[in-house]
Amino acid sequence: MMVRILLLSITFIWYACHPHNESRPFKEHVNVISFKEQTLILSKHAQCRMACRDISKEEIQFILDNGIVNPRKSRPAPSPDKCPTKAYEGRSPEGQQIRVIIGTCPEEPILITAIDLSKKHHCNCD
Image (cartoon, rainbow, N blue to C red; front, top):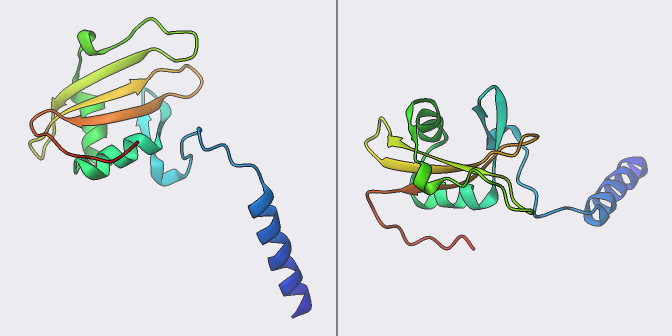
């Protein structure tokens, strides 16, 4: 019993003291999508926007697989501190007109945000 309490205490202390980099997106299995034979990480901001705008991972996947790139909303030339972005747009099977913005970082692409183009939503995702 004492060993179990000691192990739980050590685990708790390690977790509480272990540095967490909050600027990194979640990397849990549930927060990824397939993108061009890579894993696309969903940022916290994107997850919040998806929840607020009622956009599912399946809809995001559908837009990435079947949508078109909007060059006016994409940023192909990276800035010194950001990756290039691509904006994919299309209509989901559920009928939403969606735009997704992908940070096309070569080592780790990331879903930056998801937008319902047909309806204005008031999200608090800052």
